Length: 67
Image (cartoon, rainbow, N blue to C red; front, side, top):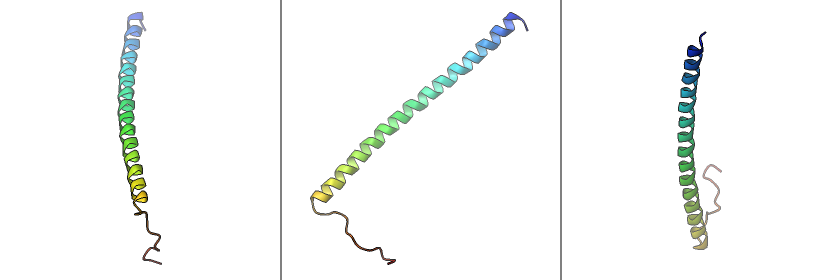
């Protein structure tokens, strides 16, 4: 295998790795954004539950209908 062919193979591999790294970076960015959304949602739900509890509208301790 000539030096030129070896360089071409190396350049192809580097290009594929750069593409993979960019794809992984995009995935991590999207996951981070989704985690932020979920954290916001959980905080709102927790606040809603606290508000219901403070208003005296907590969950009722009734047995489910199948008992």
